[in-house]
Image (cartoon, rainbow, N blue to C red; front, side, top):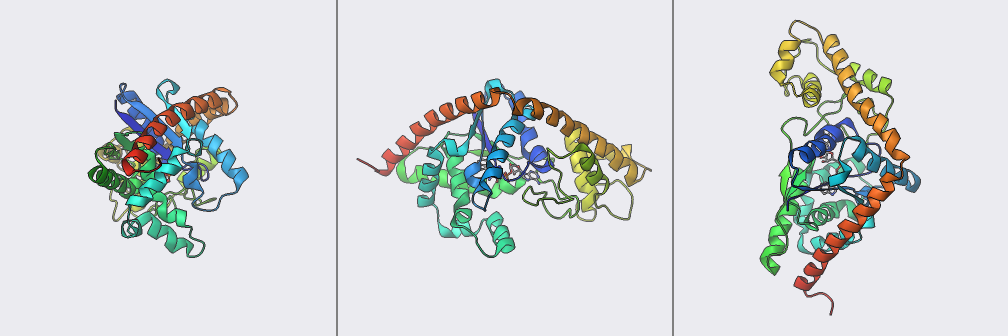
Length: 330
Ligand code: TYM
Protein backbone atom coordinates (compact mmCIF):
# COMPACT_ATOMS: atom_id res chain seq x y z
CA UNK A 1 0.00 0.00 0.00
CA UNK A 2 1.34 3.41 -0.95
CA UNK A 3 0.70 6.09 1.62
CA UNK A 4 0.76 9.75 0.62
CA UNK A 5 1.14 12.03 3.65
CA UNK A 6 1.56 15.72 4.24
CA UNK A 7 0.85 18.39 6.84
CA UNK A 8 0.21 22.11 7.04
CA UNK A 9 0.84 24.31 10.09
CA UNK A 10 -2.22 26.11 11.48
CA UNK A 11 -0.38 29.41 11.88
CA UNK A 12 -2.59 32.07 10.37
CA UNK A 13 -4.80 31.45 7.35
CA UNK A 14 -3.28 29.36 4.53
CA UNK A 15 -2.04 31.37 1.57
CA UNK A 16 -2.19 31.07 -2.18
CA UNK A 17 1.36 29.69 -1.84
CA UNK A 18 0.16 26.87 0.44
CA UNK A 19 -2.65 26.21 -2.00
CA UNK A 20 -0.56 26.05 -5.17
CA UNK A 21 2.51 24.45 -3.59
CA UNK A 22 0.65 21.92 -1.47
CA UNK A 23 -3.15 21.72 -1.03
CA UNK A 24 -4.01 21.81 -4.72
CA UNK A 25 -1.48 19.06 -5.43
CA UNK A 26 -2.96 16.90 -2.70
CA UNK A 27 -6.25 16.97 -4.58
CA UNK A 28 -4.55 16.25 -7.90
CA UNK A 29 -2.69 13.27 -6.44
CA UNK A 30 -5.86 11.90 -4.93
CA UNK A 31 -7.39 11.88 -8.41
CA UNK A 32 -4.29 10.49 -10.10
CA UNK A 33 -3.53 7.71 -7.60
CA UNK A 34 -6.79 5.89 -6.84
CA UNK A 35 -4.93 2.99 -5.19
CA UNK A 36 -2.94 5.05 -2.73
CA UNK A 37 -4.06 6.02 0.78
CA UNK A 38 -4.06 9.68 1.74
CA UNK A 39 -3.07 10.98 5.15
CA UNK A 40 -3.22 14.73 5.70
CA UNK A 41 -2.94 16.46 9.01
CA UNK A 42 -3.02 19.77 10.79
CA UNK A 43 0.48 20.24 12.20
CA UNK A 44 -0.53 22.04 15.41
CA UNK A 45 2.50 20.83 17.39
CA UNK A 46 4.64 22.49 14.75
CA UNK A 47 2.68 25.71 15.15
CA UNK A 48 3.74 26.17 18.79
CA UNK A 49 7.42 26.34 17.90
CA UNK A 50 6.68 30.07 17.76
CA UNK A 51 4.29 31.83 20.21
CA UNK A 52 0.57 31.40 19.45
CA UNK A 53 -2.54 32.88 21.00
CA UNK A 54 -4.41 29.74 22.21
CA UNK A 55 -7.84 31.00 21.12
CA UNK A 56 -6.63 31.96 17.69
CA UNK A 57 -4.73 28.69 17.32
CA UNK A 58 -7.88 26.68 18.07
CA UNK A 59 -9.80 28.59 15.42
CA UNK A 60 -6.98 28.21 12.90
CA UNK A 61 -6.94 24.44 13.47
CA UNK A 62 -10.63 24.16 12.70
CA UNK A 63 -10.39 26.48 9.70
CA UNK A 64 -7.51 24.50 8.27
CA UNK A 65 -9.37 21.21 8.69
CA UNK A 66 -12.30 22.68 6.76
CA UNK A 67 -10.00 24.18 4.15
CA UNK A 68 -8.44 20.81 3.37
CA UNK A 69 -11.90 19.65 2.34
CA UNK A 70 -12.93 22.93 0.74
CA UNK A 71 -9.92 22.67 -1.57
CA UNK A 72 -11.48 19.51 -2.97
CA UNK A 73 -10.07 16.50 -1.10
CA UNK A 74 -12.37 13.52 -1.28
CA UNK A 75 -13.29 12.49 2.29
CA UNK A 76 -13.86 8.88 1.18
CA UNK A 77 -10.17 8.18 0.73
CA UNK A 78 -8.80 10.47 3.38
CA UNK A 79 -7.36 10.11 6.85
CA UNK A 80 -7.58 13.69 8.08
CA UNK A 81 -6.35 14.29 11.61
CA UNK A 82 -4.93 16.78 14.06
CA UNK A 83 -1.30 16.04 14.91
CA UNK A 84 -1.60 16.68 18.68
CA UNK A 85 -4.52 14.23 18.92
CA UNK A 86 -2.25 11.38 17.86
CA UNK A 87 0.19 11.33 20.78
CA UNK A 88 2.67 9.08 19.01
CA UNK A 89 3.84 12.07 16.95
CA UNK A 90 5.49 13.61 20.01
CA UNK A 91 6.96 10.24 20.96
CA UNK A 92 8.39 9.62 17.54
CA UNK A 93 9.70 13.18 17.38
CA UNK A 94 11.71 12.46 20.53
CA UNK A 95 13.06 9.21 19.09
CA UNK A 96 14.16 11.12 16.00
CA UNK A 97 15.96 13.63 18.23
CA UNK A 98 17.87 10.76 19.75
CA UNK A 99 19.34 9.73 16.40
CA UNK A 100 19.91 13.18 14.86
CA UNK A 101 22.93 15.41 15.34
CA UNK A 102 23.15 19.05 16.36
CA UNK A 103 25.25 19.72 13.28
CA UNK A 104 22.66 18.48 10.82
CA UNK A 105 19.87 20.47 12.49
CA UNK A 106 22.06 23.59 12.55
CA UNK A 107 22.37 23.32 8.78
CA UNK A 108 18.60 23.61 8.19
CA UNK A 109 18.11 26.79 6.18
CA UNK A 110 14.57 27.41 7.42
CA UNK A 111 15.83 27.40 11.01
CA UNK A 112 18.73 29.69 10.13
CA UNK A 113 16.38 32.14 8.36
CA UNK A 114 13.94 32.21 11.26
CA UNK A 115 16.68 32.72 13.82
CA UNK A 116 18.05 35.59 11.79
CA UNK A 117 14.65 37.29 11.79
CA UNK A 118 13.75 36.52 15.40
CA UNK A 119 17.05 36.94 17.32
CA UNK A 120 15.55 36.59 20.85
CA UNK A 121 13.12 34.03 22.20
CA UNK A 122 14.07 31.29 19.76
CA UNK A 123 12.68 28.08 21.24
CA UNK A 124 14.47 24.76 21.32
CA UNK A 125 11.38 23.31 19.60
CA UNK A 126 12.09 25.51 16.59
CA UNK A 127 15.51 23.91 16.45
CA UNK A 128 14.25 20.33 16.73
CA UNK A 129 11.25 20.96 14.44
CA UNK A 130 12.66 18.87 11.56
CA UNK A 131 12.95 15.83 13.84
CA UNK A 132 9.25 16.11 14.71
CA UNK A 133 8.50 16.37 11.00
CA UNK A 134 10.60 13.27 10.29
CA UNK A 135 8.62 11.44 12.97
CA UNK A 136 5.32 12.55 11.36
CA UNK A 137 6.37 10.98 8.10
CA UNK A 138 8.05 7.80 9.33
CA UNK A 139 5.22 6.81 11.70
CA UNK A 140 3.05 5.69 8.79
CA UNK A 141 5.51 4.03 6.39
CA UNK A 142 4.81 6.94 4.07
CA UNK A 143 5.87 6.45 0.46
CA UNK A 144 5.25 9.94 -0.95
CA UNK A 145 5.34 13.36 0.70
CA UNK A 146 3.93 16.16 -1.47
CA UNK A 147 5.33 19.52 -0.31
CA UNK A 148 6.50 22.89 -1.58
CA UNK A 149 10.13 23.59 -2.29
CA UNK A 150 10.85 25.04 1.18
CA UNK A 151 10.36 21.62 2.82
CA UNK A 152 12.87 19.80 0.62
CA UNK A 153 15.72 19.93 3.13
CA UNK A 154 13.47 18.71 5.97
CA UNK A 155 12.43 15.78 3.83
CA UNK A 156 16.01 14.89 3.08
CA UNK A 157 16.64 14.79 6.80
CA UNK A 158 13.65 12.45 7.26
CA UNK A 159 15.16 10.15 4.64
CA UNK A 160 18.59 10.27 6.31
CA UNK A 161 17.10 9.46 9.71
CA UNK A 162 15.08 6.55 8.32
CA UNK A 163 18.17 5.08 6.71
CA UNK A 164 20.27 5.67 9.83
CA UNK A 165 17.75 3.97 12.10
CA UNK A 166 17.34 1.04 9.70
CA UNK A 167 21.11 0.58 9.53
CA UNK A 168 21.55 0.65 13.29
CA UNK A 169 18.54 -1.28 14.46
CA UNK A 170 17.33 -3.31 11.48
CA UNK A 171 14.74 -2.54 8.87
CA UNK A 172 11.98 -0.51 10.54
CA UNK A 173 11.05 2.49 8.41
CA UNK A 174 10.12 2.96 4.79
CA UNK A 175 12.36 5.64 3.26
CA UNK A 176 9.97 8.36 1.98
CA UNK A 177 10.16 10.17 -1.34
CA UNK A 178 9.38 13.84 -1.91
CA UNK A 179 6.83 14.97 -4.48
CA UNK A 180 7.53 18.56 -5.46
CA UNK A 181 5.64 19.90 -8.46
CA UNK A 182 7.52 21.57 -11.29
CA UNK A 183 5.36 24.69 -11.38
CA UNK A 184 4.41 26.58 -8.25
CA UNK A 185 6.58 24.86 -5.66
CA UNK A 186 7.65 28.31 -4.45
CA UNK A 187 5.16 31.15 -4.85
CA UNK A 188 6.75 34.47 -4.01
CA UNK A 189 5.46 37.52 -2.13
CA UNK A 190 3.58 39.87 -4.48
CA UNK A 191 5.30 42.96 -3.08
CA UNK A 192 8.72 41.43 -2.65
CA UNK A 193 9.06 38.69 -5.27
CA UNK A 194 12.46 37.52 -4.12
CA UNK A 195 10.90 36.37 -0.83
CA UNK A 196 8.55 33.40 -0.35
CA UNK A 197 4.84 34.13 0.19
CA UNK A 198 4.43 33.28 3.86
CA UNK A 199 1.35 33.06 6.08
CA UNK A 200 3.32 34.22 9.11
CA UNK A 201 3.57 37.66 7.51
CA UNK A 202 0.20 38.96 8.70
CA UNK A 203 -1.51 41.87 7.00
CA UNK A 204 1.02 41.76 4.25
CA UNK A 205 -0.05 43.25 0.95
CA UNK A 206 2.09 40.72 -0.84
CA UNK A 207 0.35 37.69 0.59
CA UNK A 208 -3.02 36.29 -0.51
CA UNK A 209 -4.96 34.40 2.15
CA UNK A 210 -7.52 31.76 1.19
CA UNK A 211 -10.17 33.26 3.45
CA UNK A 212 -9.74 36.95 2.67
CA UNK A 213 -12.42 38.99 0.86
CA UNK A 214 -12.40 38.42 -2.90
CA UNK A 215 -12.11 42.15 -3.64
CA UNK A 216 -9.04 42.45 -1.53
CA UNK A 217 -7.48 39.49 -3.39
CA UNK A 218 -8.10 41.17 -6.74
CA UNK A 219 -6.63 44.42 -5.47
CA UNK A 220 -3.47 42.72 -4.25
CA UNK A 221 -2.91 41.04 -7.61
CA UNK A 222 -3.43 44.28 -9.50
CA UNK A 223 -1.00 46.02 -7.15
CA UNK A 224 1.67 43.32 -7.44
CA UNK A 225 5.19 44.58 -8.11
CA UNK A 226 6.38 44.07 -11.71
CA UNK A 227 9.00 45.94 -13.76
CA UNK A 228 9.21 48.76 -16.26
CA UNK A 229 9.64 46.64 -19.39
CA UNK A 230 5.89 45.97 -19.66
CA UNK A 231 6.36 42.73 -21.59
CA UNK A 232 4.77 39.54 -20.29
CA UNK A 233 7.82 37.29 -20.43
CA UNK A 234 9.15 34.66 -18.02
CA UNK A 235 12.59 35.59 -16.71
CA UNK A 236 12.96 34.65 -13.07
CA UNK A 237 16.30 36.42 -12.59
CA UNK A 238 15.56 39.76 -14.20
CA UNK A 239 11.77 39.90 -13.97
CA UNK A 240 10.93 38.13 -10.68
CA UNK A 241 7.57 39.91 -10.21
CA UNK A 242 5.98 39.07 -13.54
CA UNK A 243 7.57 35.61 -13.49
CA UNK A 244 5.90 34.90 -10.15
CA UNK A 245 2.54 36.07 -11.48
CA UNK A 246 3.04 33.89 -14.57
CA UNK A 247 3.77 30.94 -12.30
CA UNK A 248 0.48 31.50 -10.48
CA UNK A 249 -1.31 31.86 -13.83
CA UNK A 250 0.27 28.72 -15.20
CA UNK A 251 -0.43 26.65 -12.08
CA UNK A 252 -4.10 27.58 -12.05
CA UNK A 253 -4.79 27.28 -15.80
CA UNK A 254 -2.25 24.61 -16.88
CA UNK A 255 -1.11 26.97 -19.67
CA UNK A 256 2.65 26.87 -20.25
CA UNK A 257 4.78 30.02 -19.95
CA UNK A 258 5.05 30.09 -23.77
CA UNK A 259 1.25 29.93 -24.09
CA UNK A 260 0.89 32.82 -21.67
CA UNK A 261 3.58 34.86 -23.42
CA UNK A 262 1.89 34.52 -26.79
CA UNK A 263 -1.54 35.18 -25.33
CA UNK A 264 -0.35 38.54 -23.97
CA UNK A 265 1.98 39.51 -26.78
CA UNK A 266 1.61 43.22 -27.50
CA UNK A 267 -0.54 43.71 -24.41
CA UNK A 268 0.57 45.44 -21.21
CA UNK A 269 0.67 44.23 -17.63
CA UNK A 270 -2.77 45.74 -16.96
CA UNK A 271 -4.60 43.20 -19.16
CA UNK A 272 -2.54 40.33 -17.81
CA UNK A 273 -3.05 41.28 -14.16
CA UNK A 274 -6.76 41.90 -14.72
CA UNK A 275 -7.21 38.39 -16.12
CA UNK A 276 -5.06 36.83 -13.42
CA UNK A 277 -7.06 38.60 -10.72
CA UNK A 278 -10.24 37.02 -12.12
CA UNK A 279 -8.65 33.55 -12.36
CA UNK A 280 -7.38 33.61 -8.78
CA UNK A 281 -10.61 35.14 -7.49
CA UNK A 282 -12.76 32.46 -9.14
CA UNK A 283 -10.61 29.66 -7.73
CA UNK A 284 -10.61 31.08 -4.19
CA UNK A 285 -14.28 32.04 -4.26
CA UNK A 286 -15.20 28.40 -4.99
CA UNK A 287 -13.04 27.32 -2.03
CA UNK A 288 -14.67 29.90 0.26
CA UNK A 289 -18.18 28.78 -0.73
CA UNK A 290 -17.37 25.17 0.12
CA UNK A 291 -15.59 26.27 3.29
CA UNK A 292 -18.71 28.05 4.51
CA UNK A 293 -20.76 24.87 4.10
CA UNK A 294 -18.18 22.61 5.74
CA UNK A 295 -17.21 24.72 8.73
CA UNK A 296 -20.66 24.41 10.31
CA UNK A 297 -21.30 20.81 9.32
CA UNK A 298 -21.00 17.94 11.85
CA UNK A 299 -19.24 15.96 9.13
CA UNK A 300 -15.98 17.75 9.90
CA UNK A 301 -15.75 16.49 13.48
CA UNK A 302 -16.83 13.02 12.42
CA UNK A 303 -14.06 12.90 9.84
CA UNK A 304 -11.47 14.17 12.34
CA UNK A 305 -12.56 11.53 14.89
CA UNK A 306 -12.29 8.79 12.30
CA UNK A 307 -8.91 10.15 11.18
CA UNK A 308 -7.60 10.23 14.75
CA UNK A 309 -8.65 6.60 15.33
CA UNK A 310 -7.04 5.27 12.19
CA UNK A 311 -3.84 7.29 12.54
CA UNK A 312 -3.50 6.30 16.21
CA UNK A 313 -3.86 2.63 15.39
CA UNK A 314 -1.11 2.69 12.78
CA UNK A 315 1.13 5.02 14.75
CA UNK A 316 0.87 2.90 17.88
CA UNK A 317 1.84 -0.21 15.98
CA UNK A 318 4.92 1.55 14.63
CA UNK A 319 5.99 3.11 17.91
CA UNK A 320 5.82 -0.27 19.66
CA UNK A 321 8.06 -1.75 17.02
CA UNK A 322 10.50 1.14 17.41
CA UNK A 323 10.61 0.89 21.23
CA UNK A 324 11.31 -2.82 20.93
CA UNK A 325 14.15 -2.28 18.47
CA UNK A 326 15.64 0.34 20.78
CA UNK A 327 15.42 -1.86 23.87
CA UNK A 328 13.13 0.55 25.73
CA UNK A 329 10.87 -0.54 28.57
CA UNK A 330 10.58 -3.98 30.09
P1 TYM B 1 3.79 25.01 6.11
O1 TYM B 1 2.57 25.05 6.96
O2 TYM B 1 4.78 26.10 6.24
O3 TYM B 1 3.36 24.93 4.59
C1 TYM B 1 2.42 23.96 4.15
C2 TYM B 1 2.77 23.53 2.74
O4 TYM B 1 2.74 24.65 1.86
C3 TYM B 1 3.97 24.75 1.16
N1 TYM B 1 4.28 26.18 0.96
C4 TYM B 1 4.46 26.77 -0.22
N2 TYM B 1 4.44 26.27 -1.47
C5 TYM B 1 4.66 27.15 -2.49
N3 TYM B 1 4.90 28.46 -2.30
C6 TYM B 1 4.92 29.01 -1.06
N4 TYM B 1 5.13 30.32 -0.89
C7 TYM B 1 4.69 28.15 0.05
N5 TYM B 1 4.65 28.34 1.39
C8 TYM B 1 4.39 27.13 1.94
C9 TYM B 1 4.99 24.08 2.06
O5 TYM B 1 6.13 23.65 1.34
C10 TYM B 1 4.19 22.94 2.63
O6 TYM B 1 4.17 21.83 1.73
N6 TYM B 1 6.82 21.65 8.19
C11 TYM B 1 5.65 21.81 7.36
C12 TYM B 1 4.43 21.07 7.89
C13 TYM B 1 4.69 19.64 8.18
C14 TYM B 1 4.83 18.58 7.26
C15 TYM B 1 5.06 17.42 8.05
C16 TYM B 1 4.78 18.50 5.88
C17 TYM B 1 4.84 19.13 9.43
N7 TYM B 1 5.05 17.79 9.35
C18 TYM B 1 5.26 16.15 7.46
C19 TYM B 1 4.96 17.24 5.28
C20 TYM B 1 5.19 16.10 6.07
C21 TYM B 1 5.31 23.27 7.25
O7 TYM B 1 5.70 24.05 8.06
O8 TYM B 1 4.50 23.60 6.24
